[in-house]
Image (cartoon, rainbow, N blue to C red):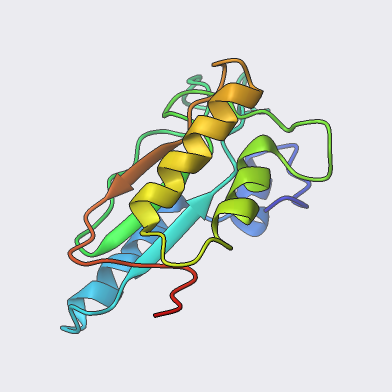
Length: 145
C-alpha cells in the first residue's frame, strides 16, 4: 500500500499483501463457475525493493505475474522495471489511466494501449506499462450503449 511504512523484512506481513494472495482470490472468483465475471487488478506499484540488501531476491521492480483465466492484470511498467512517481499529484501511469477510463465504449485492451503510449511519451521511453490478460469477453469501464 502507498502508505506502508516498511523498513524491515518482518514488517512485510503486517504492511503489505503478497501478489500471489491477490491472484489466488482472482482464480477463486473464476472457479465459481460464472464465466461472465471479470477480475481486474491494476498495479501502480512497480518499485525497487528498499530491503534489497537483506532480502532473498535482489531483482528490481515487480516480478512477472500471469493473469488467471478470465482476468486482466495491468502494471505501471514492465516486469523487473521501476515506475516513475512523476512530478504532479499522480504518477504518469495513474494520470493516463484516469483520463482513459472516462472515454465511453473503449474496450479495456485499447484503453491500456492508449495509457502505454502516453506513459512512454511522458517518460521518454523509460517506462512501458505492461498487461497480462486472459479475458474471454469484452470489458468497458465506461459503457454507454
